[in-house]
Amino acid sequence: MALHSYFLIFPASAWKLTRGLPAMRSMAKIMKRLVGFCIAGQVPLTESTWCLYWLVVPPESQRRGVGAALQSAIEREMQASGGQRIVCETSGRDCYAPARAFYRSAGYVEYGRVADYYSHGDCCFFFFKVI
Image (cartoon, rainbow, N blue to C red; front, side):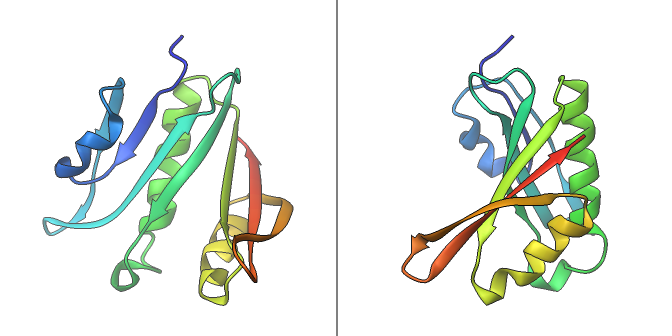
């Protein structure tokens, strides 16, 4: 079993992010325009825990099911690779409230916060989900 592998949904120009690691890739596109991407990887030295590093949908594509479709796709890939749980983090700033609401609606549970994590006054929310 590889120590670290990635599932990516991104434009082909970002392929370099894999740094040569084995990877699978796909894109979420509407009319040939990228509308979102996500990057996740198995947490090193864990048996079945994955980290959702990025789930990005530009504002003009939000609230159209793109994030949910990406989330579902990546969860299927994680499960197919033996993943059983996902962890992710996001900022405590007000502008990230929609991201926190999205994770909660997708079944993630907040399991911790760290004050001043990103910068003074900007805490980090940690989320966890069993798949």
